[in-house]
Image (cartoon, rainbow, N blue to C red; front, side, top):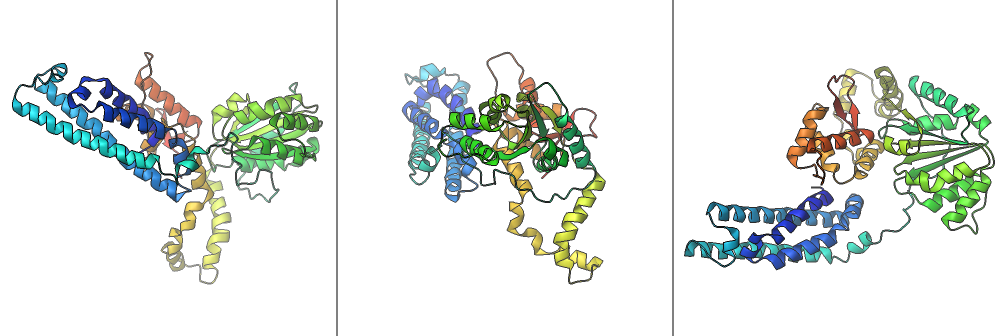
Length: 460
């Protein structure tokens, strides 16, 4: 269950019953109103809770308890629907029931029993929600959302390291992008977007460009900034100043830091914004800064979302998956060279030895869960709006990983994942918009074998 998505769909249903006649029949209006108000208050914490539950065991427990309550709350809606349907099948208008005009004494006592059962359920839910809402060990952590994003634990600046590259694809892509960056154009600043799914090699390509000798010769000032989805505006600006050889003492506000950055960008500069999740980092921090610099600044952006690169008017390069030959070369170079060599180094590299490695418990160690690729994919999922999360998770039901756009859109509508708007658009058309947004975020990919608009799920 995706809590914020569930709640956004549940509350309108609950409101309809609160305003309806069946609520008066069962005399549970006050309890339902209390349930609605409590859920609305808790709803403000859900985004923060979902984001932190994997790294904080207490918050994870809090979320699980809340999900249990949500399932029971959904059952309440089912109970109300059943009562409403039963009253209509008996041929009794709901309004007449308010004055207790029942067809028989049995109907009257049956209504009293249902009223007691449903009222007790709602009271129990409200009691459990009160405990969850008043959990002082959890809510203070979720309420304290700073105005300025937290700094990421990954280093903001770039450390030059040896890059192991296989195949010719990265070399060719880097050469083409370097040529575009070095071209003389009339624009004082130009943005280049490197777009692709998590782990496909965006940062590797950006590093190749950053370390190129022609780039070093033409851009005396090169700055690498790791942005991430938890960036700090002032920290990024201070890092630019530090890399440019400036001093940040006495500059604390964003405005003064931006002014300081402009004064330092007096020469040709290349700024790499790595792992950008939001266009605000460009619009609020670097667009005016780069435009107002005396020198010619070029910006290289790596992002998973093509929409972000387009909003920056960037020249976009999509990173493609490596071919099969390069994939085998990478496997031989990285896995067989370093990892397997440690296992087979003292034994004969025979078929039996390899089979022993295959059966080894080493493949099931917890460290596998901490590898960068799965973590990167989880970040992409966590960044999705709530209405897209169930749509993406639903794709996991397709075992072949090849999905038809038409079939997928119809399935999403049937599952109730598509929110109807106030306009006249068909829900299937809205589902197609969801579909293309998942593609833009590189969570679905075009299937080169598909001839009818098939897409593939990002395979971790």
